[in-house]
Image (cartoon, rainbow, N blue to C red; front, top):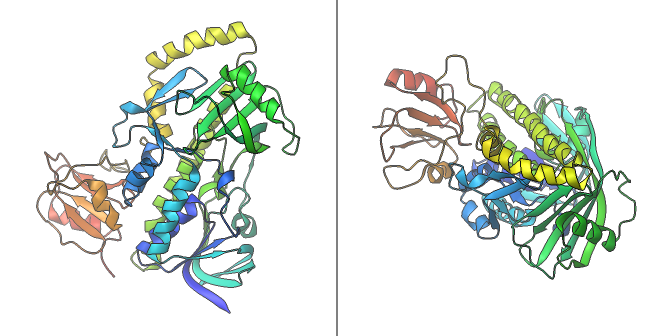
Length: 477
């Protein structure tokens, strides 16, 4: 028997779960295929949830619950002493949230199941065949499936990407990074304890349940992933880089890994699309990987739903790659710059002391620091706008207060567009909500389901507004 769906999402990590939940919430029939029989919480690598991702989750009613499970880091250290002061971001979430990936996955899976997503575990994709009217997928362990579209969210070793023939060029940037889950006798003062010096790089990140992820790299070490690693080797590095191993003990597992820097040459091949690590992978420096993937899903979900339901044509789906491929490339550059900064740590104690004196001053004086904070957090990401567009078009919209007492991101939970304007110049529909601002309004804003501005005008008239709305999938078919 071949199971049918409107969309097959492959990979039940954060990206796949968010995308599947969004599609199902919009009324799309979704099956989520996952190779693993059970999620392995111990192997989670992502810990930082940035401000823009929290806004995305807020638009789905999940942010406050996740924040309660984590620890806020309003200041993030880079290179040991250079600080990104996230507390000055203009957002409801002026911090990085430190919480293990499995906390987020639990919330997203619960939402996806409640929306009607069917999750098939033990489904390893072994064949992907495109046809004019859909895609056929064969799995080892769960049978055959067909759908109008397939989205590969199945990670750096994506079977969907490989079987579709999409190139994934790049290279490794650092090898022999040690990882372990450990307990500590001494609790570090900071939410994330991190430093780099002539000896290498080290970091301690809390799970929130008494366990910590210890990460370390010895300067110049490029041993393979399967090289043995001992508890004492990692603890010794922590002492040399952090000044203390904080009483590290009882590692429940310990291993090495290497970090690649790669990006898919395209995010779409016909009816097959890529998102998350299947589309881009880079160093964990800056904690941008999972966040970029979740924002991929937020961009793609409403577009794919509109195309599947006949509310929009193929050009809207093309805009996914046009908007998100440059963002993925930017994430590679930022994480790569941080990684290379760590790898080029001063090789002498004196040089390291000099850098520790210079970095805080650079942090205070550099105009690039605030720019870096906006990009790292995702708040500063904008999408290209057509020539002659209003200056706000393509930008992320802040969480506006509305006249009825609600917040904008609460209204976005409906999954449609929101028109922020005075009066009611057009009728509402299932996919368009009208909202009046609580205070003065300089511009009328048409806001996409992903929280970016589709169109803005300082002096709108009903005719211009109706013409603009015809470009977007706001009418119920």
